[in-house]
Image (cartoon, rainbow, N blue to C red; front, top):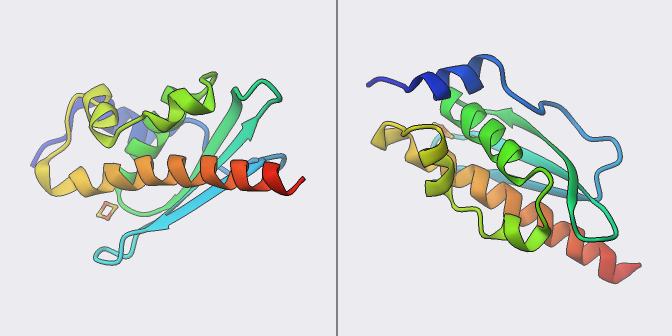
Length: 126
Ligand code: FES
């Protein structure tokens, strides 16, 4: 099993790590099989643009790399654009993942979607 340079780069120097204090959408997902957990924080402005995003992952290296890449891919995008982010697009941007690790990228896609759902729900409650 080998990892692309991009995966190693995002694993060793993950982008946008930590909690966003002024996040208005938070998504948390876990994978029951491996027990890994990922949290995604987004800050959406009044124009529906994701101004800032960060993540926290208690999980494997591929989960760290895919969440890091996913944050870069949705930053500055509208929530509608971000909803279209697929795990395969993240894998492609990372120049591939070993097949046994593709499920890790699914966590990133789901965490982004849940964070956006959370944002929409909170907005309706206002
Ligand atoms: Fe579970 Fe990677 S092994 S997220």
